[in-house]
Amino acid sequence: MTFREATTSDIKEIQLVRNSVKENTLSDPNLVSDQDCEAFITKRGKGWVCEIDGRIVGFSIVDCQENNIWALFLAPEFEKMGIGKKLHDMMLDWYFTQTNEPVWLGTSPHTRAEKFYRKAGWIEIGNHGKDEIKFEMTKNQWLHKRQSE
Image (cartoon, rainbow, N blue to C red; front, top):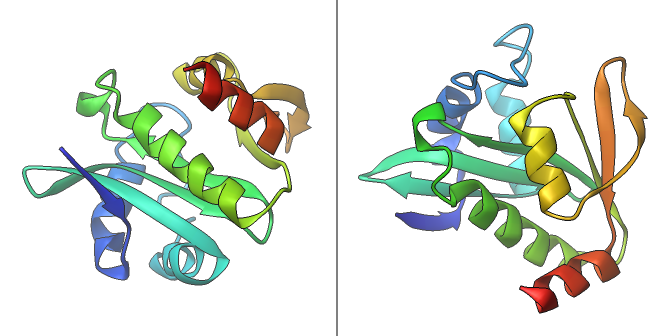
C-alpha cells in the first residue's frame, strides 16, 4: 500500500474510483470532468492517492480556494482497511499548513461517509445544497484531535 500526492497522470484512475462508489454517487458520471480534477489537484488545491499493486484504490482532494474537501473516495472493495482515514489525515495535515481557515464538506445523510466524518471529529454546522449535511473542521479542532491520537 503506497500513499502519495496525486498527479495529472492519475486522473483516469481517480475517475474510475469516483464512479465506482455505492454511496454519494454522481447523478451524472460526466458531472466531474478530467479538467475539473486537473484544476483541483494542480491549481486550486492538492490531492493524494493510495495505490495497491499499481492500482489507485482511493483518493482525496482538498480545494484551498473554497476551503472545501472536494473529494475523498475509495473503491468499495478497499473500504474498512484504514485507507480513507490515512488519505483524510494527510489531506488535513497539509491543508492546515496552508491556511488557518476552517475547512468544510458536504455529504449525504445516513451514509458511511457521514459516520466516518463524525468519528473523525467533524462538526455538523447545517445543510449544504438540497440533500447534504454540511460539516466543518477548524485548525484548533484538528490539532487537538491529532494530539489525542
